[in-house]
Length: 74
Image: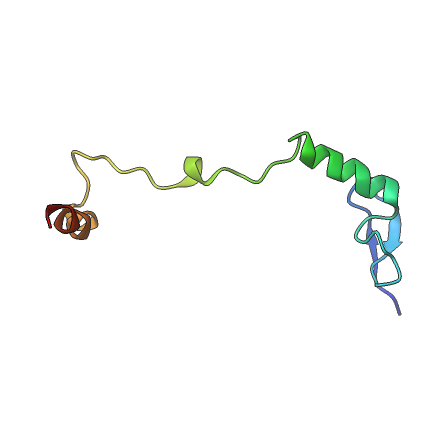
């Protein structure tokens, strides 16, 4: 039995196998529309800069920077 999934663009049930050259999309059209959205930056991978922990330089843990400070002094 071949696995069926919904096309990420249009929602049509499509076969997810090597027989479908456009998988996970149902057609070349849906695949190209998705690619266009990525290339126009309508879709983006989240920026890690905004999700990284913030450190307060004045009140941070000195141990976090000990090795860095020692390397700078030598």
